[in-house]
Amino acid sequence: MIHVFNAQEMLDAESEANYSLRKGVNNKEYPQVHDYYEIYLVTKGRFDLIINNISYTLTKSQLAVAFPNDIHSKLDIEGDELCDNINIAISAATVNELFLYLYKDSPKHILVHKQHIFDISSNQQRNFLTSIRYFSLFRNDQKKEQRAELRSLILPLFYNIIVPGCKRQQQNLMIIPIWLQKLIDEMNSYDNLYEGIDYMVDFSGKTKEYICRSFKKYLGITPTKFLNTKKLTYAANMLQHSNREIADLSEDLGYSSLSYFYKLFKKEYGTTPKAYRKLFQYLPS
Image (cartoon, rainbow, N blue to C red; front, side, top):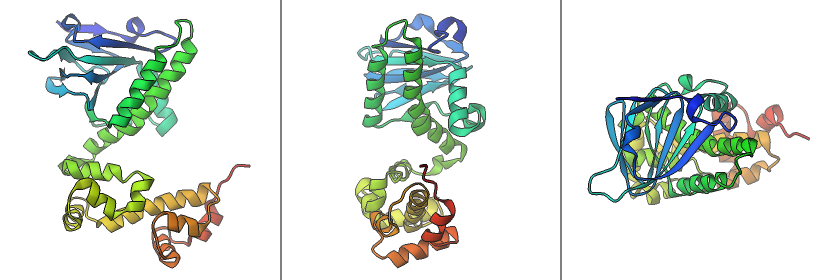
């Protein structure tokens, strides 16, 4: 028997959410389906999760999402100690509003190819747990505060974890080896960009030559081209939104020659950094 739940019955109308901290799994609730989103995070141990007849084992380093209308079940793993896990239910209306704010579009257009299991870093998990603990301090009559805190909690989950994961699926990038996917994600950090290929070698444990061959094979570009594109995107944003000196930006990004930075920037954007700033700089008074 499939248990059917809906947001009107299960979620608080003002805070638009519900959350629970659980020890083990209540099998009487499953399988279930509902019209809201539900996020699962294991804080200790593991459990099995079945979504639309596909089985996953959720561990502490992973986050899971059940989308509206997904038929899903949670199961304790026989022989394992009961796991500690967090469920957080979010109304579809809340997620829709967040997507309109972030992307000016709806989840059904952004999340064309659903993914249900996402790897998370220890830092992301720590931030999630900190927010949940803070969320637990609000009184029952502080609905507006609960609603604001909930949105500040789920926004980075969707923006930093769920949407990028689903886009990778949609773009059929799963043929890329896991180590290379993780390396690409790591290079979204400004500090790692500065270190460049040396960081790539240290983080991946691969040789420079192997990294170069892999980039060419899976992405069709060299690591140098990949890094320069990232760096120049950062530089263009800083030229537009800051008053940093161009020479300082060049040095910050690891370019030893200002003329070389100018050459790369002009090739990428069709104009010099100075002219680009004059055209696009926006500094509110």
